[in-house]
Length: 219
Image (cartoon, rainbow, N blue to C red; front, side, top):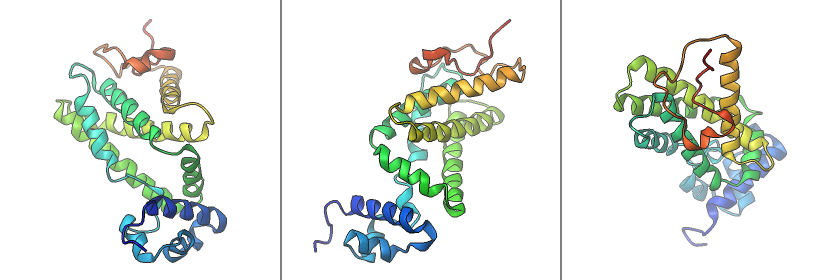
């Protein structure tokens, strides 16, 4: 067998998902996954650090990608508008390169394991930290940067969940829906604070369906 077997990473991913769903995450070993894929344990560890990481492809790269997208957003945009624009672009790009069926299967496995859910929370925290750093570099104050970063991380996670559960709608539709839910929650709470006090127009994609950057309607 060649040292670098073409398609090995994809085969390992498919084997892991099949086994996790058949037996349960806790009852599967790296050796089981490698055997199902027709590879060795050594081959497995060339691609994944442990049996969790097969469920979190590109997780280590995502925070940096998000950070760069926030930094590249319109310099005149308010913090939340800049983050939404960045998440819209990054999320749509990621969704284009992720098999929807496998994403749904990953979600099903993660939802059954406390260990995997903790790994997902770590991933979300890393994204929030990246957003926070980028906003501070853009000149946003520490308090606002920390708050918007947490909101952005949650929005991204919920948008992906909606995309995974949807049969046809793309990532953008999930993002719009989450934005709508947050705006509705603020409206229901009777808030008068504007999270986009500068009145910056929403990112182009978020202008649809009335998805302005979380500004409650003025009286």
